[in-house]
Length: 98
Image (cartoon, rainbow, N blue to C red; front, side):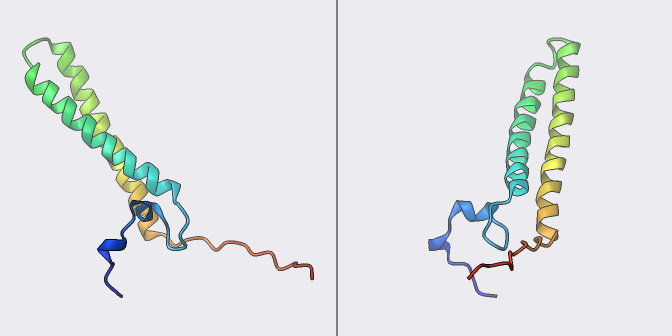
């Protein structure tokens, strides 16, 4: 296996499968992880700074934090599934007219 050339790196290649096609599962998984980490961080900071305000706010922030962990789990599962499954064979049309 050859080393990747960092000067030729393209961000779009992150979301491509082994055949060069863009994988929707990788895109959704990646953005789900990014959004969940941001929401988790914001909700955690808000919970720390407003913990003395009111109990209902604390319950809402705890629920948001738990849901962001669930979203991260789903996103990372999507990335793992795409990583460990083989690409499907694309059907070819053998009925070419000459």
